[in-house]
Length: 87
Image (cartoon, rainbow, N blue to C red):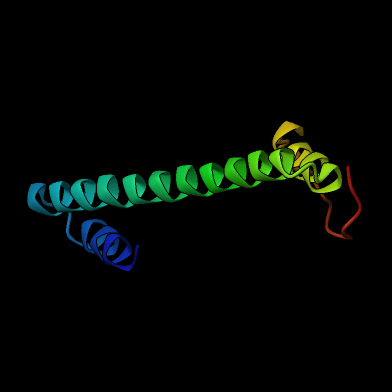
């Protein structure tokens, strides 16, 4: 991630084709690493749920399965005036 950030700053400061290609390559590898880590974390969570189900630990099973079933919501951007009140 740090290499990607440095390449991004270099790309912004000196807009050349080499800098852009270097940044895009590092960005692609960084995104791939993040995807693999996220997928691995979800697979570990699924294994924990399956293990809890096999051991008849219903409390852990439902607690962990609720994590996977809940909807991921994004925060709504709010507009505020100068006083900090929501418009």
